[in-house]
Image 1: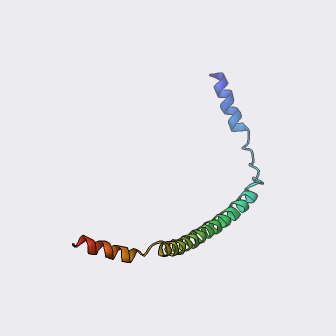
Image 2: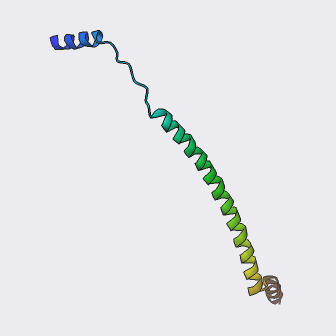
Length: 84
């Protein structure tokens, strides 16, 4: 019980220590802002490249299918034969 009292008295007597300013806080916030900017630019570039790739793939697929087979004529023939 005496030890508890001594600790309480010491805590009350010792002045609160001043907290030093974190010298890395500014550097961290600057790097964090730069990362956010780069992340948004990467997301935008990724979206644009995905759209471009999708359009290119669509054009190539349509060209390949056109050269491979005329599906409209094939479907017309199948529907004609199915009607018999």
